[in-house]
Length: 168
Image 1 (cartoon, helix red, strand yellow):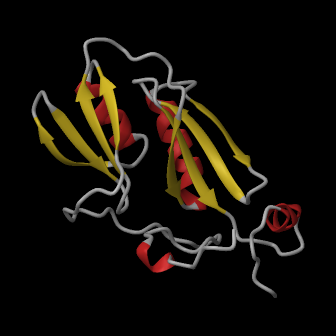
Image 2 (cartoon, rainbow, N blue to C red):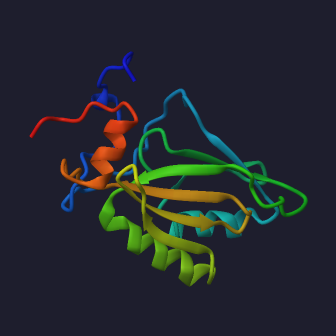
């Protein structure tokens, strides 16, 4: 990791911490640098789950063709009609959130589709992750960064993998 530079100013993700607050939903129109297309046989049910469970908003809908969902800037999902339920996903969609949202999202998703969540769990790369399997069989990983304790196993793991850590 020697050819990188900090570019946090282009990201909507706040600095990690117990008091981190999520940015507002971003409703601007931009050229999407990346988006996920999720096929669904029940567009209305999928919109309901993604909005009420995962905290997205319906940015716009073209009836019967597409619903464009968004949370923060650059967190775009297009729900598109499909004839049948897709097979279980082999890849996952990573979506940033803040620590205070993890339990709230877990509870909201479980209330809509019991048993659809796994976790949350702490990772060696200093995040908390909640896995959600949506009604379309999409595997969504809601990820919140934790404050970094420079004396922790996570800090040693990051350093061992080439990350330059701040010095106290």
